[in-house]
Image (cartoon, rainbow, N blue to C red):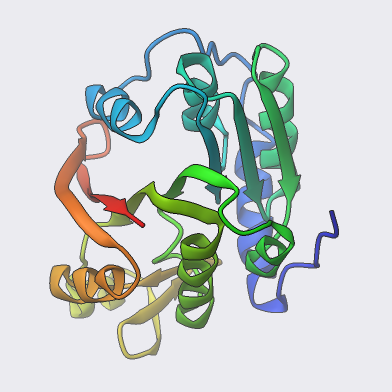
Amino acid sequence: MVVSEPMSDYHKTIEYWDRIFSEFPADFNPNAPLPYPWMEEALDWLLVSGSRVIDFGCGSGKFLLRAAAKQASFVMGMDISSQAIRYCQENARKSTSSYLFMRGDVSSLGNIPDSDFHGGVLFNILDNILPEDSIELLEHFTRILKPQGRLLVKLNEYQDPDAYVESGAEKLFEDFFSEGGLYLWNLSDEQARELLEEYFTIEKETKVHYPEHDTSNRLYYLVN
């Protein structure tokens, strides 16, 4: 499988995540429940026996490896951070399912055959890359997921634009910001639904909480 070089727009993003994941301890036990009940509930919805699941922007790979420990027969994770992939591979050795973790960007998905996966995961990635890449990402997932395939999408909480700029973010263009090498496509609930419904059917949407960070995310259950 050919892996393209990530776009130059993401060099600072790669540096940020490489730094974060180089400090992660490799102590994840995929046989133990994930730390938030909503994660287990979302996985139970996503998986059927023998599922093939792909996670783009997989980060630590913990959600994907937990899927492998439950019902998935094959999991594939892709991320632009080489340190994230290293972390995934270290923990994947504990998995009894088949797996593949690789460094790649949105264009790398073009190498995946049509209807190759039953389920997909896009957690805090659609609104953290350039909008044109987000559109391409959704187009790829409609192609590589089977008909009626399931997709979990998690987006960041909507930020007040003025307050976000005052906190140090740089406004690059309408609804799009940059801060410390990270991007935020600041989608309102209405904008998010409009974007997702162009490609998938929304079966359910809910808010999930991270009490230790005093923040929430928006979680969407989508069907191809």
